[in-house]
Image 1 (cartoon, rainbow, N blue to C red):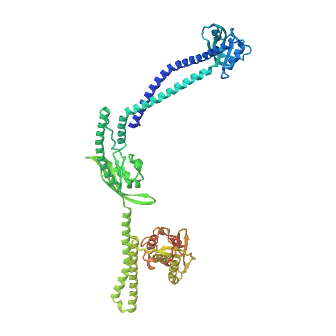
Image 2: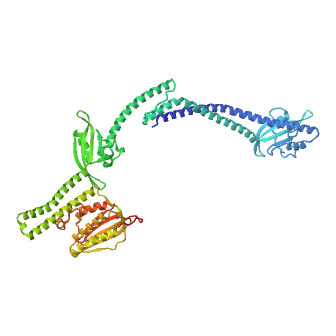
Image 3: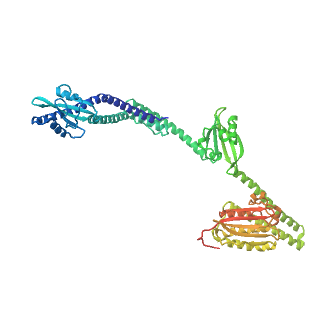
Length: 599
């Protein structure tokens, strides 16, 4: 659809073309009259010019004839007067015949122009086809006078194409004049059309600017004619419209800013269940975009819980709330949904609106809090129960038996130590999870840390008759805090020794993989079932709770190790097969080649 400015531009072109067509018609009529007249005039002038040439030659040759020259001699002189080879000037005798010596001699009938010149009547000019030269030529003849009588005829002949060339030049001059006239007519017509349409076009441009959203568009008032009054009225309407639109836009902007800044997803539909509004959070959650506004919600969401809640709230006119789960980027996300109808008046609804808030993390934290409370309570109950039981036994009279008393106090001390270890691990885990733990990062020889951890744990392995060996390791430098990394190594080796039967083996290895150093701790233990692998790094998670507790573990070592490794920008993982053993690996970024070595 053409805009107003485009329509006025087309009108201006039509005015210009109309003016040009009128000029073309006028010039065509003038040319139709003038061209034949000019062509005839130019043809007559050219024929008269050739005839005058013949008369001048006759007058000059007449003087030679009075001196007694023959017709043949006069013909030779006449032939020498030609200035181009296509031209013929010759002399014929009183009977109209050319002398035998003439290069134009012939025995044909006497030409009509020669007859007219001999007799002194009629037109001594003729245009005809020459069968000898195979050309249409213009002929003119003049009497050759001697002593007052006609002694012969001087004949001049030129190709008619020479006359056509002259007429062609006339055509060219006239054509150039017509083109110049058309150009002038087009220029004048365009100038007049622009002058007539300029005020209306300015008004159309202002209207077009307003239609595109530019509310500052105004038309120049111009003069006091009808177009000027129309421009002033238009400007008044545009100012009123601008004030109203600005007020509405401000109100809409405030609402949109509030909705778009919400972290909750907001979706609204109209009475016909067409998408009316959605903010950025809703676009990301539902995979929709601004281009979907106005489309039916059932086409966009299908059987999605949001669609059901919108339709239920719109049709029933009541608020609804529910929770639903969606799969987003390969993970389950839980959302709480509140739907309410849009009121259009008492008892009438114009649509519905839904607000969705993700509660995945909230529910996870609630679950973790419950699990932590239960796990901590369970972990504390066992040593506290043991301490209380042995204390009551001692108070009941076992203090008199020194051996029994010492044995019970040893158990109480071990349980208290276990409680202190549990509290220390909980505090360390809390620091890592809150990112409050400080890391003293520096270049560290990781191969030296691996060797140190193996040396520390070798006596424990020997007590259980387990072979602890270190695979050949390259010299690798990493940027890390040495003490936490050493804690990770000892924790992994300690777990491998605890869960490997006697006479088994544990191996510690170090290698590089592109930009990472990879540390592995392998064992020949009982292995970990596949169902337990995803939760092996969770707090208080144990594959075999009774054996883990007997081995003195708190269930927090692997969780702490995971946080330490991830705080260094690394990754920790485990692979295992039941009855074949386990392999724990973690990675750390390798330091730059020029980094100095601290340890």
